[in-house]
Length: 116
Image (tube, rainbow, N blue to C red; front, side, top):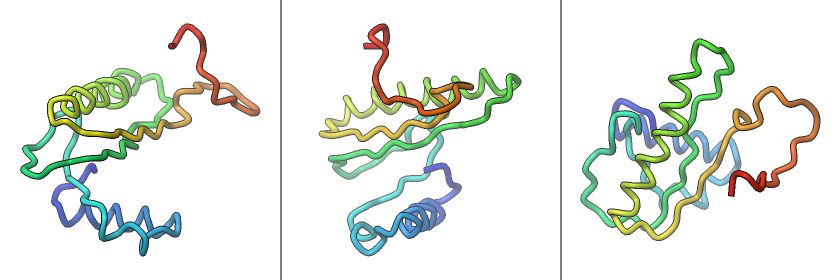
């Protein structure tokens, strides 16, 4: 979770859970870890079974293209590599609409055969 402290990361996670109406169900079952995937992953001295990865930049500005790649692609690669080393059992990845570019109308969630 992009945050300056563990307390701020936890507050942001609780806010997100509150928005989706699941705070009571999950607030005692999660641990938000502050960090920035583009700067590496902090040392974590506890077993981690599951990761929910929903970080990303959604700016469509051409000037942000390199930074978006760094955050959305390289940050995810760093997390996946680290997860393999740590023996994480499950990773849940939540993408953004950024993947659709400037398409309009209904966007199907089918994978392009060239992406598999």
